[in-house]
Image (cartoon, rainbow, N blue to C red; front, side):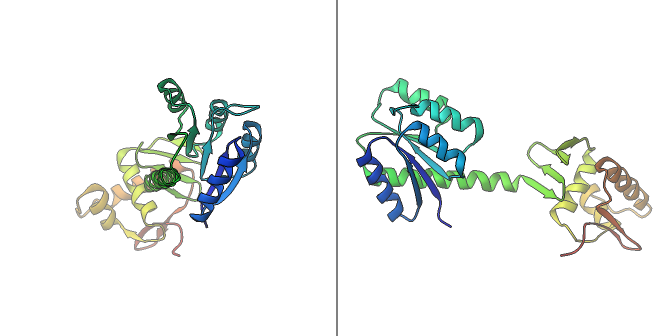
Amino acid sequence: MSERILIIEDETAIRSILSELLADAGYSIETAGDGLEGITKFREKPFDLILLDIMMPKIDGYTVCEMIRRDSNVPVIMLTALDEEEAQIRAFELKADDYITKPFSVKLVLMRVEAVLRRAKERKSQEAAATLSYENIRMNRESHSVSVGGNPVSLTHTEYGLLELFMRHPGRVFTRDNLLNQVWGYNFVGEEKTVNIHIMNLRRKLGTNLIETIRGVGYRLGKEN
């Protein structure tokens, strides 16, 4: 599915040029002729990127950008005749992702659009890699935090290690020896009771029995696929 781009620009000729350029490049395009129409369309459906003029009737681009940022981190490229440093600083303070001044090269616009969309994809990929989820359990590996149903849960370092291992491999059965090796870093005979106690505490804190006991074998998170 092609990325959806919203062009908010009051000059008909520029709007037409940008629409044709980006549509030919394979993007799905919608346009708005003023700030009010632009913010209305933004709220109606999701977009992957917004090209935003600053000097527009009804609502100016700065205000539109500010309103967008209250609800979304969608990439925004300012496209404007204002080339003063103060204008650019204000745009970036409002968390615009890029700033292109008019008159512009259509090739430059296309390259900037591609670059901003690529960065957005990389950011999403990094965020996804940093987050693990199973059912209503969510783990953020960057902040080392866990929540269940949106409520934070405080885990010890070992409990966190156990849960992370289970969530990285849902459905896989781990023997107690596996867990001792991968979480504790050792495998001593007679330490299986330690694993059992930590699993019991982990279940209690999570308030769920999603971590199953496989009798005579070990434990797993959920069912096998």
